[in-house]
Figure 1 (cartoon, protein in one colour):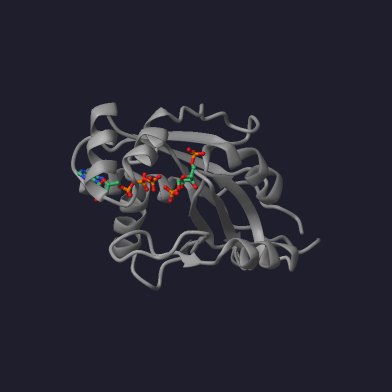
Figure 2 (cartoon, rainbow, N blue to C red):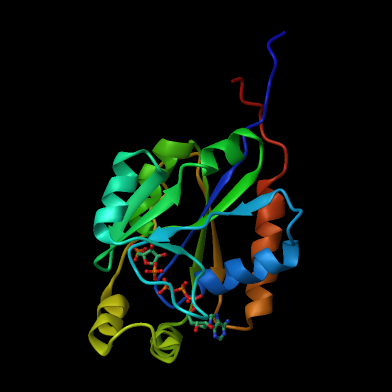
Length: 197
Ligand SMILES: Nc1ncnc2c1ncn2[C@@H]1O[C@H](COP(=O)(O)OP(=O)(O)OP(=O)(O)O)[C@@H](O)[C@H]1O
Ligand SMILES: O=P(O)(O)OC[C@H]1O[C@H](OP(=O)(O)O)[C@H](O)[C@@H]1O
């Protein structure tokens, strides 16, 4: 009998700017604590780190291009004039059977499925007027950048029939959306057919 090993699942969290992706991920990370089998990918972004915002690593354009050429990323994409990367180390975590959660562009789902196989997609949304209020209140973007983010419409298209999409409306309390996201992670971790490596 060949040895079988169940590879971990990649969970892509997507949705419009201001819906609360980082907020829900942060709440779930706190709830799960450091000993969980769920890992939250630390993104590399060509944006200076900002207190109170997503805790990501920052590189300038040249540094990002060099890191990309050196194979530092498992997945990259561009949006809002920025480059984003998911560290290549997430491949080791998946190979070890861990669940890896990452905040992705809706446009990166096809590349993610090519990189990681069948992925779990969680689309976080909120009422349009809340998106506008939240992005403005966060104060990270200029008025023009806020307008561009609100105008950005990207359909969430599952890359193939194996990728499940769960939709979470974060128009209410953060705790409610975090609870639904945690339930989704539990479901995602349920046994699936073993992958022979
Ligand atoms: N349920 C909620 N109720 C009230 N405020 C919220 C809720 N969820 C998130 N927020 C607030 O909305 C703002 C945007 O949230 P967050 O940065 O998590 O969104 P995002 O989807 O990651 O956006 P982006 O794609 O632009 O990074 C933050 O200031 C956050 O504190
Ligand atoms: O609109 P789409 O393509 O889905 O997402 C574009 C990008 O914007 C958001 O990041 P951030 O707000 O810059 O941290 C998303 O996480 C994604 O990386």
